Length: 67
Image (cartoon, helix red, strand yellow):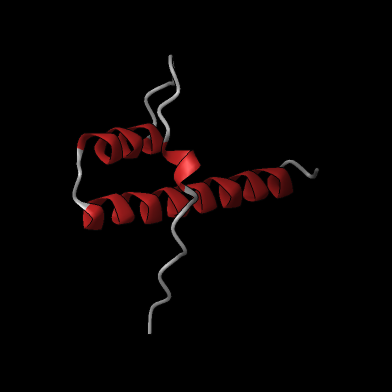
């Protein structure tokens, strides 16, 4: 059975002014543009997944660079 990640905190879904175009930024825009709670929850889950991927990529890069 696949484990679905916990949704990120709602505070993470606030749009930051002058934020670069990233996956998380696009998810924040979708989150703020809809009132559908199911879609909002999916945006929070996808944000958690994206953050986890970013952390893993940083780990791999550090290992590759011998840090």
